[in-house]
Image (cartoon, rainbow, N blue to C red; front, side, top):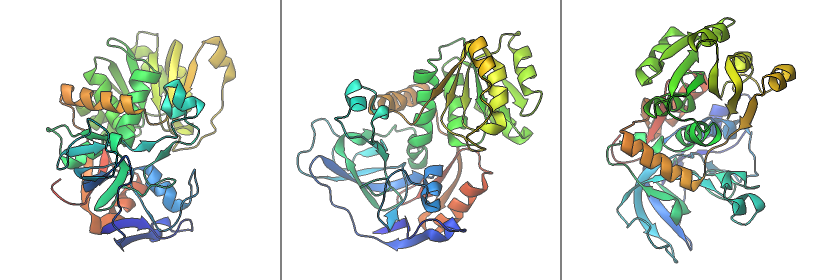
Length: 351
């Protein structure tokens, strides 16, 4: 089968580690399903793998890709009851957990000590004609979504959902600041929060991206910089926001702290501009702020996300779509950071 894979990792030109060519077609084992892939979307996790930044040892060559949508092709032995029949269109839950550690047994499987994404650990990724994963991890695809839009429900959209509605526990009528419009997490956080009746304030370095935020449902848009927090405080009647969705890190951290109301929450799932900003502990304890980490989401949260998107008629923003043969160009666009929404790869079928 054709696939995009990392032939090696690290070095000064990580995109040169990409190869596109033949790889063995995987066979499903007990409790597993093979999906004929139609589309996938890129994540920074894929870029990190090319750079050699991996959480678990992996063998090379390694097929990249965490997100995906396709058609159920075949099950291995011991197919679980209630799983979609062969030929069904599905979207993939991208995470595997051990199932027996303290975190898994607690009900929050994202505290599993050894959770992995597709393309991590023992599992190959989704940038291929076929992928094998646990049979319970395929969910019927919402009919209104294209293959690429459905694939985009994976890592970024699930991360945004957990940040908004689980970690920040936002409810209609509350206010959220979303930092760094452009990436998949931020764009879907804006769209989902606005649809759920949460007032969204968006911050970005450029007016062009703020215009995108307005189209996605942001009520208030603020240029990032020294005066951003003052503008946000003024826009909220002097109170500040209930929560901040923070994926940028050092460049926006000061604004995130200053824009929060007393007792507010910053939910952090990334730090693209640096992971070590000043802690400002005085502000933290005096204003009784909460800083909460978040990564991806559980399988029940993914099911809830798919239902939410379907009920609300939401469609993940897609920046561009590329054929697998131009996968290196798609990665170049991801690395440049000038995209708004998800970057898709077509593996078969339609966009």
